[in-house]
Length: 379
Image 1 (cartoon, helix red, strand yellow):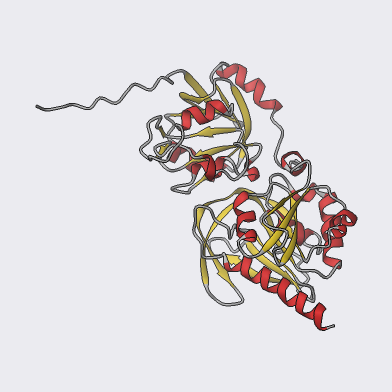
Image 2 (spheres, rainbow, N blue to C red; image 1 turned 135 degrees about the vertical axis):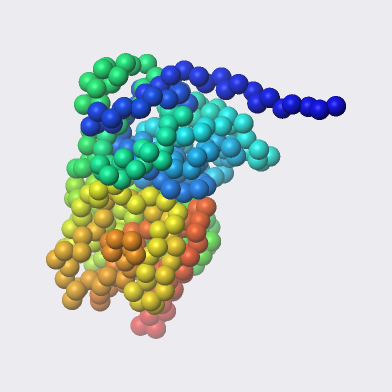
């Protein structure tokens, strides 16, 4: 007997529209929760890890375009989240699947998006859309299953520009909390500008007792905890308007303790040392960005997610050393503050789900703390 498998009809068939700020309009099907949502549109080229992307606080205020053709086919697992819930403003995909094949998955991506009030659109030619964004640059966008295109043209004017927008204080923890055992050999104070769970996991696995502090914590409160080192996290928004964070980072550097920054933390360390930042044309977001370590001469495949970058204009090389460069466009990917125990990278060495070429940076940070402790004991 021959059997014919018929795929169940997707219950989500309501029409939706995607409108870009320059008037470019696309029609598709609603996914997630019905409604209207706006934000800056950007794209991620990663082949896997969509749940990690959606829950990364660095994406707060942004509509994500997944360039991978099939999204939702392996469902969702709460353990794979980078924060407590999705932080994206909206989602754009090509082929959306409510069916999933992974046995360990807890629910479909559709159910997950609905539960977390995320509105998205599918059946979009994402290859064409990404080529359009690459040409025209990042801009605001609107997804709606309830408004007409004409109504959307008025609504999109209300979406704030990412340029000049401070968002870290919104996604940051409101109260300090600790991770791992207090008996761990190294105490690390992490400033939360939108920190990912996988970063904390990497620190804890290397013997760090981590205390995560709100973004606007004063240096007095940080120092009162008596940390051995400081971590400056990733996060959303424009670093150039974060005067409160830059001032604190300057004070942290002056303590002489080891400092490690990732992504936004890298930009803040740069600003605290006289460098400048700028908004990129369409940013770097994906799992296959090539970076050269200028210290070792070795190449690394890296995970990246940023729409702002550190400028290479006006660098005081007597004070700051550039340690890493992006091999595609020569953007600054890493710096080290001379005569201080402070360094940072623009990309994500924790890279969950991957690649893991750059996790040595966590080892270098811990080694720096260990050396500082030995010097203190010897003195």
